[in-house]
Image 1 (cartoon, rainbow, N blue to C red):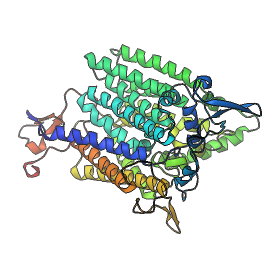
Image 2: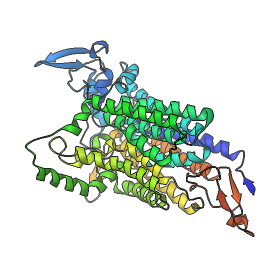
Image 3: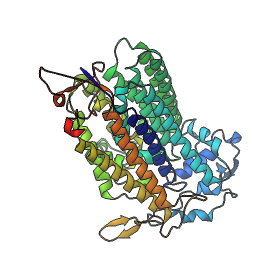
Image 4: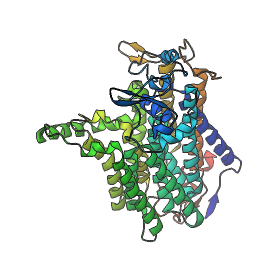
Length: 529
């Protein structure tokens, strides 16, 4: 047996470039869209400046027709002034002053849990625009620190699996929402990191095991503080991961996951969002419900394509992405889907079915009259947090000898980089100067983002085009370095039969009984050196 190691200088350099690339990508999405650009941001920003309890939030209140209104800064209440008009930039935001207040009934009075708004209120200052990008940066930092810690403490052979699942699930829409002022940011971070930490804990020992348990608990807290459905997803993820990988020797993990799941279910029922699950309308007949259910089932493929921006891109679902952005992202997802299906066993199939059943079943259950007349009204971003965990489950395998060619890896990096770059380019163009509607082509962004800018962040030293270039280059760099680190992970090459050449050697991971070694590149021959 021979031991293969990557260059001692190349791997640390790749790790540094990976971190720098991720930071550049995060910066790009923080500034890619204007304040108030994510769905219902007039509600979320007002709730951030005036969180519960209102009396101690610092916001003044007023009563209009017997209803309580809060008095936030005008730019928060009118943050969506360009919404639903792709041709409009955010230049309308210049009309509103941070010094003025406006009565708003759009604030959290129990629909969302404690946590997200109260935390971000710590960064709410007089300058709304400055506060918005600080809050977004904090959300990106939470993801990087939490997921980075999980990857640092998890077993090395699991890091590629977790990283691959995150990248495929979040390109491009997931990254947009993580770097936003929407509670979906914490939902995406919390649900995925909870699943990754629980999965890693089941394959860890000693102090790493207990550290990962702590990170798992912190991830669950993000879920509890973001959305009621994200809190419920703790139960879904726990059930899926425990079915997949737990044993009777893992009682601390089982007990912790069970306790956190119960808390998550209670949190879900404590919010106003839970009424969607129990609503009834006597005027809607059983036949009508069945008809709507069949129509929604037929629409599920389109709904899942919404994870990648189809019919509902950035903004208030009013920033149409070019069709090929969704297509290339779906091509990668399809390749991953077929790749993960190369081996199957009962536990993997059952675990994947549980999480997939929640991704499909919850929208189908909720999307019935009268609240949500069809599944399209229940936005894909609500179910998106489960996709990353489902991919972790789907990509696990007992198969040890599968490899990926260099050309396949190149296409993987190229396709995802195109999807990310085009989505960010379109988003920046949407808010800097609006999109152009061209007959036969649809909504198109100007090639030069810095030409004819109507709106841009105050005191931002980078032009829109420079920001996009740095962020896109960062994504390509981070993805390339991540693939390199996964493919050059120290591993054993063993001769599987007498007389086998180095090129025929099999990749051996004798300590990983159920983890996919799929990202291991083919053992190079002398000609590849």
